[in-house]
Length: 289
Image (spheres, rainbow, N blue to C red):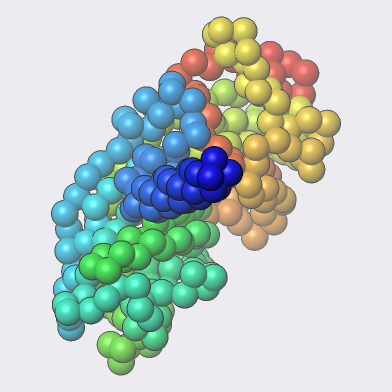
């Protein structure tokens, strides 16, 4: 009898554990706000810094039975990098069905992937973007991360609809609507001989008139800590998501669009960094600042 009671008790406990785990999972699956989605693991001082770039909206574009609403953004404009959250609704439709392809590259969504975002730039190709989705019955949440060349300063995000009958081009006249993103600059600047080094929370640009080997870059903080970004060569980097560099060529008399000087290293960071606490940097062995 006692053994039977023990078995029943164990069964009840297992059921309760399963229920608890299921509830935790469902809570974790709730749609997240921008700061939680993109920066939940950032240090407290980094989050406080990013909040200075944070903005909310309720800007809508309506087409057919869709309403697409810009809700939140964080945009740094010196070395353009941004994050947005959109809410997409469709009248009398379950947004979990046929409204997005989870593994599709780019920012395509809606029935038959009809919608996408782009910035209007007549002289440059598409933006570097990453888009993720989360759907509830009533709302499709679109989490958009993007980076642009330093020449891009307007930050008007256009919406394109493949069902509009207009050819897809990166020009405003072919869009069905636009969202004007609020922006601000947050940077620290340093100079090493003829080399300019610009640091933002999300990106680092090393720009020079003459070729310089970026063998070492360390960020030195007021509290005595440091972050090694480049360790030995430009190919040995830490916390760097995208590493583009090169010689822009003599055909650019004023440098490649957005880069004022001929040679550049453009580092897009995996995780946001604190720049308010920066005391100085060490570049190729020399402390600057």
